[in-house]
Length: 609
Image 1: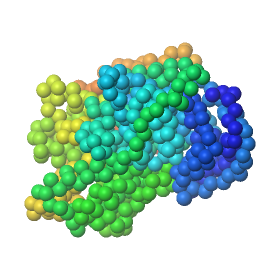
Image 2 (image 1 turned 90 degrees about the vertical axis):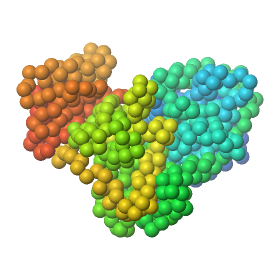
Image 3 (image 1 turned 180 degrees about the horizontal axis):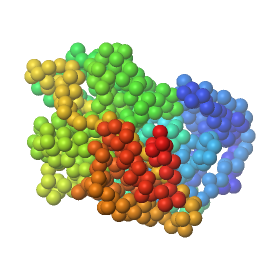
Image 4 (image 1 turned 180 degrees about the vertical axis):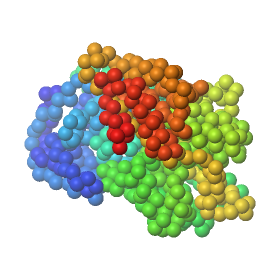
């Protein structure tokens, strides 16, 4: 693409995005708002398409965002993309990158040509997996509310077309719906799809974006993502003029379908079934929804209202990729404060909040009490263990000791604490079932949760449906109404008075690393901490632990582990007093202070606060 001249291309001489929440103005150059012209794999841009693309891209920018632009028509050379390290785009089982330039120090890493190559690589991978020879495969594509979504949707569609696949565009959609499209059998909606791609970067800032991939077997894992990125790097590197001419001749079917109507209909039917097939089992319930301007606004009008619920007071349902009100993240303090306020102000029975792509969620009862993290896991465990007595609940590694006691002593289940990472937790539950140990729920403290009955799909909307099922069923059985039904289910859960997460960063450029990978250095820190614990009579190592070093003592516990993706050692501490939390912090500090490449300032602040 470098050096090619694009005639009659609108060049934005000075463009600004102003985020009203943070009052920050970001200056960008030509590429900040205008998408790359049909990418590297099929380079072509007509005058009419240019104006259409520009106006369409502007329409994706929120009305609450101020846009300043002085534009002129001219010829311009497309900017050089430089060398792209495709493997650095991997984020566990997802792909993440910078899709909107203009923020200082954050160079573009996911432009259209790269996205086209990744989509083409997924097409190759899918054809190999499906061993498709006699028929054309089809792939569904959806996206969240990000401002780069439409541009990447078109790039991905082109990339799949280059691989000879047919494309079904869903438009604004949720991640769970995309997986569901590989299971739905309804040809009128062009389902099932052979594969699905969700364009999202979860709760990350507006300039990020990425991809999640699915087949009917579930979300792709780390090994498959690496394979796709390696294929994409080869495709990107080997593009020639002949390839470009060929790609322009390739024809593929691109159709648009309102699949979200199918997905939401399934959620509505699930609640009706739980209430004995009542048409409006939530009639009279007042439930407010906070979608954080992500993709979850559908839940109020398409799920709750058909069930009879009152949804007045719901907020931030409109998609806005600048996320002007709060970060769409159920773990974020300001987000939870927003939904609590909405519940109390509107005297609602229940509040529901989603992340950007609706694969995570949390709730709030009528008193403003949060159901997230350990409390959400306890609530769903209580519901699932009523349905499946004695089943194993799989969670991530940072769940509390109090949760274990609640699941095992009060509910009669088994708590299997595993590793961080929603895919790790889900895969472990699947593994346990295959080995004869029954498990029906896999859930992270982040709000990712998956149920066996729902094909092990981490679906924030379906988790909330499980809560609605309980409300509807309790009312139908005359066992009470309102969110107290849910609050009573977590009675007896022991919760810490102090819960902290500190991040101890590894300086990859420090001489102590001597060119080694940061993971090797992090493992040495963990081993040194492990050795020091053995000589302290006040501390006890967790007898079963799959990640990092987990230790109980001083009436609480701590877990030091190595981040899945970043040069960071997260330290979680839970205790019944600040003094006990400091004592646990001192244990870690004494063990790691000789590691000079480790930034322990967060730990020092705790100790000296």
